[in-house]
Amino acid sequence: MSELLERHRRVMPAWQSLLYENPIEIVSGKGSRVTDDSGRNYLDFFCGIVTTMVGYDIPEIREAVERQLARGVVHTSTLYLLRGQVELAEKIARISGIPDAKVFFTNSGTEANETALLLATHERGSDQVLALRNSYHGRSFGTIAVTGNRGWTNSALSPLNVHYLHGTDRDLPAFRGMSDDAYIEACVADLREVLATATAPNVSCLIAEPVQGVGGFTMPPDGLYAAYKEVLDEHGILFVSDEVQTGWGRTGRSFWGIGAHGVTPDVITVAKGLGNGFAIGGVVARGDLMDGLTANGVSTFGGNPVATAAANATLDYVLNHDLQANADHVGSVILTELRRRTAELDIVGEVRGRGLMFAVDLVNPRDGGPSPDLVARALEETRNRGLLVGKGGLRGGTLRMSPPLTLSEDDARTGVDLLVGAL
Ligand code: PLP
Image (cartoon, rainbow, N blue to C red; front, side):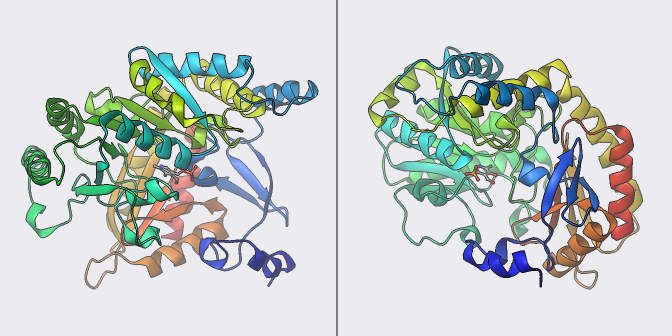
């Protein structure tokens, strides 16, 4: 056991959060690659859990942060005008597509979702919330409550009255073999039933991930959220799209994961890739909704000058290099190649993806069920070959991959070679 691994027991969550039996210490990075303390290089297909969105050591981002540090001001607070915040809010509001959008800055995805839940429950005067099975929204009291898998939370109490909808969890006997249209119809009927039987007359919001991240990059058929939104609008229920993993072109086709459904949400939450690794998140909502939040105070660190410098430079980089188009193109190369080259492997179940978010389900060849053991072995094998990937899935049987949006086609093909070799 390495000396650092021995000392790691002071850090919570400890052993269970480490991906490998012999964990690596990443000490430097460049582009799509990182280097560990022994000098070994890895192609990074997980990016610090879908976070270093445009890769490592990007000069434009480093220089923006260094310029801010050189001014000697890491923090001032939202009590004063912050030029970086204003510029970032304008950019995000424009990209959001939400009319008259305003942005509340936070430090993380959890805080962004917690704030969105505050906003919605306050606006509607109701603690009734809709969420999806198999979802993950964070680790605060409210976001745990809307996380649809008890395996990812450890709180038995809930400050919200949550009703779960099916969304992506299509692997139930009642839904097997259904066409997309029939499935959407069944989901809408389920939503109407939930609303008819909710214990209070008004429900505040539906919070949902367009592509479920921790859930294993599972996604409902395109059009489901549009069908949900129609019903939500009839009842004045807000739709919160959790774009913490799916924002900024990660899914290729659109800046937002929800774009594939042709829906403009009432509220969008963001974090992870926004600062390319610097801690920043936010809630984006219509001005009239956001104005109801003023009594909830400010966040001390939310949108601090260093984080906003990083985020402004990151978003400019995404836009200037048309990375959404790159994610679309390179992602489809990966998906096609992975499907073709794993078709004959009996340990591979579904291979799915959208843009640069893709997943491989590993199954036990005897019964076709999810295999967390194979996932653990595949993680070690890929690491040994120089590729970093993640894991996830409702039943722990999924390899998750989310390379930087800057990934070249050559590196994409190298990553596929390494992954297929490991499998
Ligand atoms: N929402 C989604 C979809 C996530 O995947 C995560 C984290 O994985 C969160 C919210 C919570 O974000 P954070 O870990 O920054 O608090």
